[in-house]
Length: 280
Image 1 (spheres, rainbow, N blue to C red):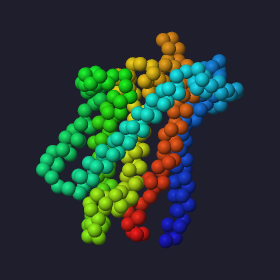
Image 2: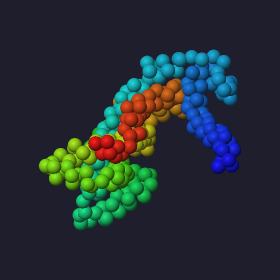
Image 3: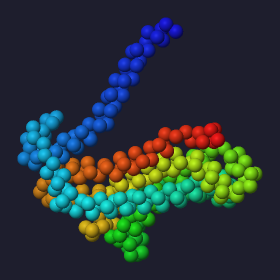
Image 4: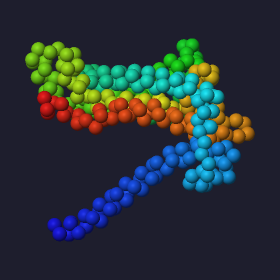
């Protein structure tokens, strides 16, 4: 016991040092993003290696907000991300519940096929996806992105939701149905509140994936009015130069929805999965 007490301060210091190193490593790109965004254009390269610019300005943020189409790109990405997150989570919750609670013919085959869809590189299937979307007349529309993003996120989200449903004892549903509830009522009143952490995790994952996706948005959208934020960032790149200040400012503004979204759902992410059942 004495040996453990003698080494515990060292272990504590080591843990905090490792945590501090990780935080610095993870947050340094964000810090550099802020640094460049407030650096005047004339100092971008002359003070490129300085930890902080000798002069700060908000001109890049004003240019991005008032002199570019950033707000339109921002709104398009918000529509696509929220639509994708809602549709994917709804579908994945139903599929995950079915895989967790029912045995039916072809179940293993369906699961295997869903896994196979995750094995193909996106570059290999972008051409067929483009042909299908073009044949449906959905090119240059936000609907096409919502449909494609939902299709690609449903498999992983389904397995994620299935794992949460598997962690909820079936006895809870059976007890509710013995008390007179239908299966749907048991699902709504008993199971749904316990899956809020899973729903929150799925919403967060899908929203982030849709918000930052570039490849499909670049291939399926060519009109300026329907561009999403990742594609809109390319407008700050010209043939002979890159407007680093405005690009970094736009990047910082693009972090706001993700941060607010995770602040909203974080309480569901930290809840115990079956805490409600234990307390109730």
